[in-house]
Image 1 (tube, rainbow, N blue to C red):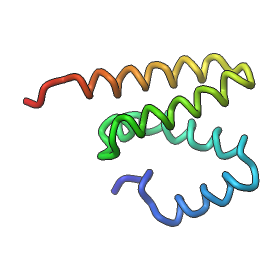
Image 2 (image 1 turned 90 degrees about the horizontal axis):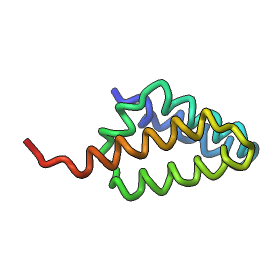
Image 3 (image 1 turned 45 degrees about the horizontal axis):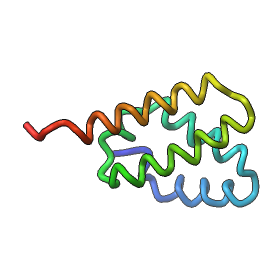
Length: 88
């Protein structure tokens, strides 16, 4: 089971997103740090993943958490690299 696809967790996260965007962004980042391979391998289009990571990156740049920015940039690179690999 992909913990990032749990419907109950997604509903709770969407509610938190409305009430406390900073906590939401931190929770998303924590999930990505815990399960980076799921973000890379997820069936969502890479363009959507990159767009979401850009939003996350903008948030953490805005609050000057550059270590988190570095992680996000690295994850974007992994997704882009995975996208460019031929299927074997």
